[in-house]
Length: 339
Image (tube, rainbow, N blue to C red; front, side):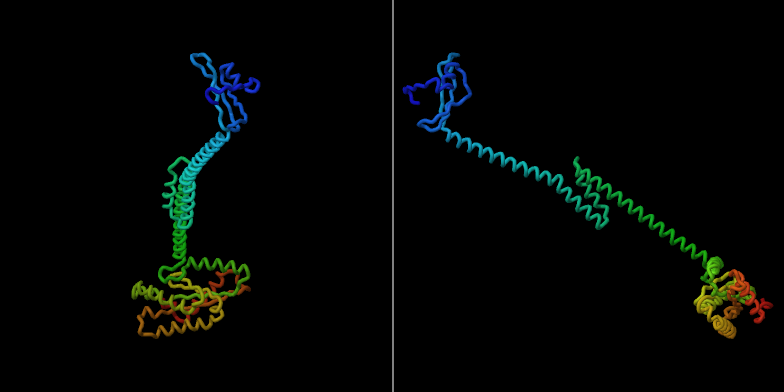
């Protein structure tokens, strides 16, 4: 509108304009039409001076410009909001990565290292990620506690295993000592009794191919009285060496001070005649060897008996016959009267 121009607005066509003028109140509505300036919006507000409505003020706005402004403003706001959202997302991702993902990755790596190296010091590194009040920290603390508990358990298990091994070794050593003759190092009377029990079980199952050789050192008392017990021990060990050398495929036992028993099996049982001859010839040759001390030229008698299912029902019967045959050999050697 231009100053001085007159416009006639019909109330029926310009209702909002006339309502604003007649009521003196804003209507909060727009009027729209097309005119020389294009498609426009008109808005009216009362002009009040000194509490008296003097008229109204009307404005018209080019809709295209308004729409462009709205579009630009919308784009600016959208870009701004988008930038803020992207920044927030980046900050959130950084926070999540730092507070959660990186901790989970470190926890996974540390657990893998522990599983490979079994190094419990890794628990200290795991605990470093447990310094905040969140689920990952709680998991890290629990994992560290588990690692330490596993380490203590493994250490306890290793200690127990070591103790059991030591106990087992000690028990084996004690068992060996319990069955070992202290002087000669061969098996003793206890070991012989255990062997007899096993033979009794085998006899019950039909086993019959075994025999017993009874060997007794001659003149032990004379050696002890004349030369001393140390020399007597030398004579016992000398005889033990001969018996073990001759009957090298059979178990040898020292069951008394001067008594040895051989349980004959396998080839030694089959070749017993030759082995007895070898034993006697060794004893005879030794008696003629003047290069040895008198107590080293040992004399011994041997007696042999074999298990006979027709008349034997125990190992003891075989032992008694072997012992009897040994004493018969002593008489042949005239060693009984010389004792």
